[in-house]
Image (cartoon, rainbow, N blue to C red):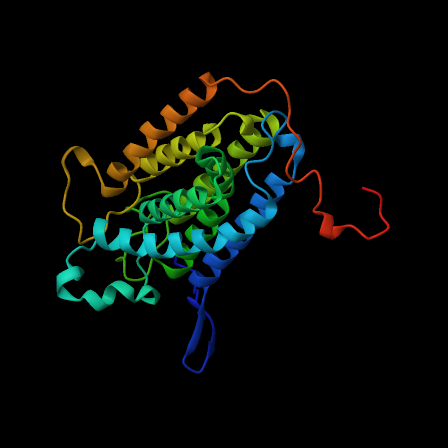
Length: 290
C-alpha cells in the first residue's frame, strides 16, 4: 500500500513550524507525568512501604526527565549512530529539529537525571525508577507514531499485505516497523506494566517494575530489529546483529537482575502512613478539624 500523505508539519506560522514529532514528545511526557502522579497518590498500590515520592516531587522531577530525554536522546544518536558529525559538522549536534534521537541515549539521560534527583531529594532510586518506567510506554507509543508520520525508521522489504511503500525508501513495500513498535513497546508493554502495578501489586518490590520494563523493551526491540531496516550509514555487524540489538542486550541483563533481586528482597510487614494520604495543612480550611 502507498504511504499515507502525511505532512510532518501540523501548523506553519511564518518561520515557526509545529511538527507532529514535537507534539509526540509533549504528549508522551505530559501523559506519563500525570500517570506517575496518579501512581504515587494511590495508597492501595503501596500497602507496605508507602509511595516512593509525593505528587509535588513528581512535578519537580518532570523538568529534569525532559532534559534527560532530549539531551540524552540527541547525544545518544550522535555517539551510537552518527559519530562522524562530531568532527565534520559539530554544530549539527545541537540541531535537534533536524531529527535524530536515540531511545537508548534518552534512557541513559533519564537515568542520570533520576540519580541526581534522588540524591538531592533523598529518595530511593529503585522505587522512583519503578514509577518512571511504569509511565514510560506513553512516550514510546507517541514517539513511534511520530516516526511513522515522518516516514522514517521504516522496516525491511516484505511481501505481507500491509507492507507500505515509504517515500525515499525505494519502490518495494516495507514492514511498517514503527507501528509494530508503537503497538508492542507502547500498548502491550503498558498493559504488562499495568498488570504488574495494579494486578500483582509489585510496587512494593523495589526495582521489579523497572526490571519488567527493561526486560520487556529489550525483548521487543531485539525481535523487531529483525524486520527494521538498519540505517544506511551503519556498518554491517557480524551474526546479523544491529546496533539496536547490541544496545538492548544490557537492558535484558539489567532487567532480569532487577526482577531477581526485587523478588528476593523482604518487604516490611507493617504499612506506613502513605505520603499522599494526609494532605498538607495549608490545604485545610482554618475551621476544618485535623
